[in-house]
Image (cartoon, rainbow, N blue to C red; front, side, top):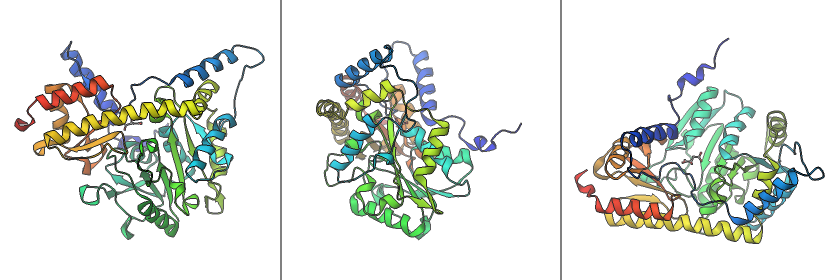
Length: 396
Ligand code: MLT
């Protein structure tokens, strides 16, 4: 028996597990200290009322002979896919219901989709980058090219001849930097992919944080994208489903490589390896799309956006450079006084008991940067910023 040796090329531990272990060790060594976690992008507000009611009803249905359900369609129930289709049409994107696949979240599908592609394909990611894109390709042994994303290009790099690759990852609003591509910039990526027969894996997990109506929420708002892109989306950050697990992936039927419809391959993959998201969870997710559900989730999103404002106001007062936080739940800041990312992580944990995510965990270009999330509670966000303001960072 031989193992997949590619796994030996991975970092020993996933970024957010490393952070969790460090925080656990600190907390055990310092009992009673109130640690404020603004690291992993995990939501704190509960599921909205309509979602809970819909799930309660679904639970009751499951306990009654006539309404009990066993296996559902692997690609999701129409009662959830239909409102998703309508949601897209509000952004002038017309989808066929069979182009929507319900999943247990964007992270799983971003990894699973790679089953469809040859391991010889080259991959282009931006540095800094959400580590899942890198790690899942290392697991498969694919060659990864890195594109510099930095303050000079506003953390929104555009493709050049050197960046040709078969599989291109884009994330907008970006995790970790919070930067968002506009339509003209995304068009450059779509044209580049079409010219080079590449596929774009577009992570739209944070689309609902976009308030600027001129910015695209879906890559399919860009002409030609249906011929070169797959979009991954999630209810985790939109509606607090990080623990409940539900999202969706859009695989257009126009996506054809080597005379093969990618949509058909994905359906084949899902029907073989996936038994679908639980009925109860999908019923809850469908409630997000009712008029009241939309109102409720917008209240939660606005709450997080206000948290982001509290964080950026404090950084302004401290004179710390940052980006993001406006159309994104993430604030990407420069570590003060030239500190390195992990140094600043330790400094904040030890001195003010605030946990963030070291920028270097997202790639070499993240060194010297740090990510804070606006997903904390209001109380903790205010308390964390008070601590930062009271603590003199000048002596770091
Ligand atoms: C993050 O903190 O980057 C995200 O929460 C991770 C994820 O969504 O998997």
